[in-house]
Picture (cartoon, rainbow, N blue to C red):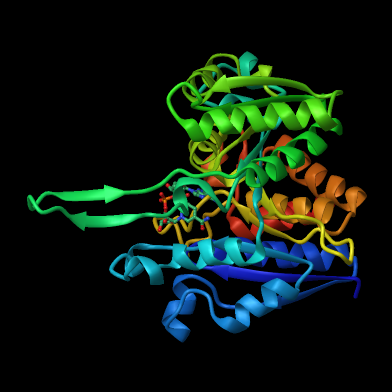
Length: 359
Ligand code: NAD
């Protein structure tokens, strides 16, 4: 075995889509060893916490971690610190995966599934690089307090340091060098000091080390508008945790379905030269369709392709997996979420099977 992959199936449709990933790994026969742990709500039910020490330890040792999804209404009453999502935030923080890569790629066969006109999205290929372990989701102080007047006040803090900004911008620049060399950095420097710092530091890094990069800056609200007006103007977008969360979800809709989009969270290369990462489909646990063999496994399978590309350095295998998914769509084989007149409607397992057949 040459690479180790930890699977965290999680909740809802998570176990269904990661089961298809396991089948793809077996079909690739590429020396990838798989281990599995409970995660999220499933881990709360079995062990009382969303992320056990054993699961965390396995995640820190594995070459790559691939998770399904976490969460669901049955765990909504848990305190914030013990919710399925808290397990995910802790895992990201402990793995120190500070750069979230979210491709928004429109497969030609799905261009009509977008809410925008075909000509606006056909050939779309944007890579979001979102800062993942800092900013307003983690900043202190935070909390809800009662003021002397009896009124309540909720506080979150948007905070970034130079090094946090530079390391994620560096990831964006490095990836852009393998694409068109165009990077758009977005923030709200007109109204937020942290945004101004972001803009200045990204520009400084580009001027010092990446003169070949064509860097533009855009306010995040304008970026939200440009994404629906003329999305193909973008190649790589680098942004903070909060704006990245919103803008990459908006871009996801351009491509037609949540069930098609993978993501990767990576950190710095470790001393042994490995680039460990946490890979996950961007969709959630989809409680409305869980357990019914309806989920589209493509996003999870494409997340495996990203793991092959970034953590295992197996670009040829990554291409093969991506091409197999694309070919399956072109052949008109579709799960319900992306089904169109004239296509063959299949369930989760048969979609997995169709992709494996085309590998
Ligand atoms: P969701 O992504 O789970 O579902 C949104 C809609 O898209 C649903 O109608 C669902 O059926 C559909 N959908 C999602 N993935 C699909 C797939 N692979 N194939 C076909 N259809 C698919 O978002 P939600 O309903 O807002 O959240 C449900 C739960 O998931 C919540 O508990 C939320 O906190 C959690 N969540 C987890 C993650 C994660 O694990 N990273 C991300 C988002 C939401």
